[in-house]
Each structure stands twice: as structure tokens, then as C-alpha cells.
Amino acid sequence: MIKKSFKKLICLLTLVALITANFAEVSLLEPEPPPPPPLNGLRNPYVISPYVDIDWETVGRYKAGIHNHSNLSDGLNTIEEMLEEAKKRNFDIFSFNNHDILFSAKDIAALSETYGMLLLPDTNEHTKQIPRDHINSYWSNYVCTRAAGTTDVEKMRHILSVVQRRGGISIINHPSRAIIMNEFMDVEKYVELYRDFNSLIGMEIVNRVDIDGEINREVWDSVLALTMPDRPVWGFSNDDAHHIDHLAHSYNVMLINEADELTEDAVRESMENGTFIPYSRFEFGGAPLPEIVSITSCSSKISLKATGYSQINWIVNGEVVSHGSVFNLGVRYNKDKPFNYVRAEIINNSGVVYTQPFGIGLCCIIEEGSDNTDCEVCGVCDCPEPEPVTTVTVTSTEPIETDTSHETTEQTQAKSPPAGSPNVSRTYVFIVIALSIAAIVVVVLTADRIIKVAKSMREEEEEETTD
Ligand SMILES: [Zn+2]
Ligand SMILES: [Zn+2]
Ligand SMILES: [Zn+2]
Image 1 (cartoon, rainbow, N blue to C red):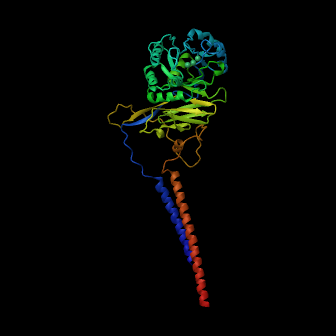
Image 2 (spheres, helix red, strand yellow; image 1 turned 60 degrees about the vertical axis):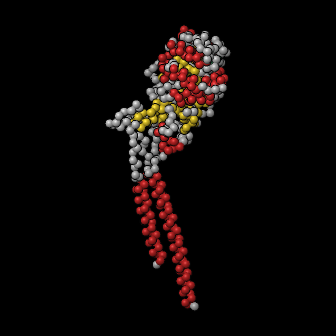
Image 3 (cartoon, protein in one colour; image 1 turned 90 degrees about the horizontal axis):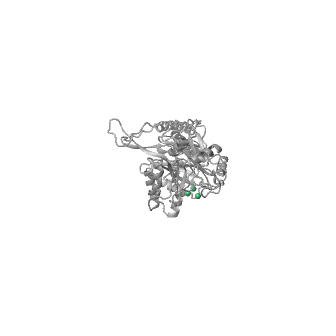
């Protein structure tokens, strides 16, 4: 009799538990939406990519070695030996930057033809007048025999201004050496030079097999932190070859749209606009470096597809802030600790492939009818809406996604649904059901025990009355 009642009770409890669980699901599925924050005048960060106009499917990739020496200065090999070897190592673009010796337009004409490579004209490395910070110049018919000024920086300014006046462009080489010699990193000096000379397009961030290592990138990051996004400073990776065996360890791959042929103008445009990729090996020889398949971006995200890598690091102000193939500005940007650029390093055991810095601009959200501020008004967000998350296996439309193992919490956060979404409520429902079942089991076991005790007491009583 008692047993039957308990069975009914158990059925009732199960029913109650299931109904509660369903109500729990309904309430968890539809959380109260938070009130929208006031938007007017809010400054919104957005990505400015040098690669925005690259069509990665059709773009031409040309290997460029733009800092090399021959025995005309202190190199060990002749011009011809260097070019012979450069051809073997698949260079498409090459330049000689002998110390204070001009390699002129007339020098290159026949050689370009013979070796089937594009040689850059009017190049040299300014050295004697500025023995600490060397400067490479291109498309500038100028060798400095006596720079005006007394300090290193005054002499650098003199050289840079003449190169600019003569229509050339220049790059500061291996800043690490000046820093090691001076025992001091004068970031402000570089920042002023980049601000004052438009034709000073970049900085050598890798020299040979990265002989001075991080120091060059420390200068680069320190400068970028102060000049971006308005004044990008492009990073160049150069062999600074003084011997044929130095070739093809640190080079740049110029990205030239298919419509433009490989011409001097196209190479110069690529150098000036940062549409190239620096490659760098840790040692002479070794296995292949990673390859960048594409770099695409929208206002709040940069997506990088690459092959043959073990890790992708995203760097802000010299610090690695995240890993993985996507940099999500929306997640990373902190208004209390703003930053104005991010760059990536794609790494494997053999070396590193760098991206140029991506600027982070700030635009203003202006509501209709309100006065505009001095800030640029935000355009429409061009980032595609994230795919709705379902529990069914999602088949990716992305053809290549080589690395998800290195994605950090950033991507995990981005991929996992926000609180209150179906996945989260389902978890709660399962917990509620499990707890209900556990409670029922406890009740059943206790009831069974009570029944047994009552039964044995009754038997004892009956025995006593019979006695
Ligand atoms: Zn030298
Ligand atoms: Zn040098
Ligand atoms: Zn050199």
C-alpha cells in the first residue's frame, strides 16, 4: 500500500522536474536585453590595412633583395657572381648598395637583360658620413662625400634631404648597430626623421640572418607606437649580402597586382605603400619558411591565412597580445589602454614571416541631428555578420584554416556563444534534470528503507502478539 503511494509520488516528482526544466530553458533562452549604451560621439577603432587592395588570388609575388654588396666595396664577389647566385635563388628584383658607391641606371641596363632580373637604379648605402646609422637610397643619383652638420642626426638629415630633393627614396639600415654603439635607443630621433622626410619609407627590421635580433624590431615597434596610424614605417628584411652564401635568407616579397607588370614603378609603389612581405631565416639554409596565402581585413578584424607555420603572434607596442589566424580588434581594443597599430609574425622552426603594421584609426559615431565633432565619422561596418551558432556540426566555408590549435581565448570567446544563447541554457537544463533525477533516487532509496523498517517492526509486533 505504502509502496504504491511512493511510486505515484516518484512519477509526480519526475513530471514536476521535467516541467521545471522546460520553464528553465524558456527563461534562459530569452534573457532581458541590456539597455543600449549612448553612441553619439563614441570613438570607434577600425583597421587600416596596407594590403586592402591586394587581390590575393591573382597577385604577382616577386622576390626582392634590396640590400647587397659586391667587391666594388667590401663584398667578396663580383657583380656577375652575385647576380648568378641571385638568379639561382629565384630573385626577381635585386639591387647593389655598395658603401658610398653609386650603382647607376646605366650600370643596370645590360645586366637586367642578361640575368632576367629587375635591377633597381641609382642605389647605394650611405656609410662614411654616418658610420652608426647607415641609409640605403634608391632612385637617387647621389653619393655624399661631405654631409653638412656636426652630429650624426644632422648628417642623416642632410643625406635624407638631398635624396628626397633628387626624387629618391630611402631606408634606415640596421638601427640596432647605432643603438649598440651609442648604448642608447634614441626613438625620438627616428620619429622626427620619419615625420620630416616623406621619402624615408622604412626601416631594416632584419639584417642577414637576423644578426642583431630583436633590437631592430624594438626600434620599429617604439617608432610605430608614436607614428601610426598617420605615418606608417614599413619594415624591410635584407640579406645585406657581402658574399654569395649570404643570399636569400632575408628578403621581401613584393605584391604587384596582375594588371601591373613587374616594372620599376610597380616595385617602387610596392616599397612606398607597404604592399610587400618581409621573410627572415634564423640560420643559413634550412627548411622552407611559412607562406602567407592571404591577409584580409574589415573594420574590426584582420584574418590571415598561411601555410607551413607553427604559430602566429599579433604584436602591439612590442608585446605579443594574441595568437592565431584572426586578430579581433573588437575584442582586443581597450579604450582605457588604446593602441594605434598591430602587426603579425608568422613563425616556424626555420624563421619568421612578418606583416607590415596595420594602423588602428578612430572614427566617431554621430547620431542623426547632432552636431558633428572634429572626428572622422564612422562608415558602415564592413565586417560580415557572424554565422549563427547551432549545435549541429558546422561545415566551414573557409577552404584553408590551417591552425586552430594556437588560437587563444580571443578566438575561443569569439566562437563560443554569448551567455543566454541556446547552448548555455541547454547546459542548465541538463543540470536541472540531473539534480531532479538524483533527488528522486535519494527519495526512492529512503522510502524503500522506511518501508523495510516498518515491515520488520510490524513482523516483530505480530511475533510478540503470537507469543
Ligand atoms: Zn659592408
Ligand atoms: Zn650598413
Ligand atoms: Zn650594407
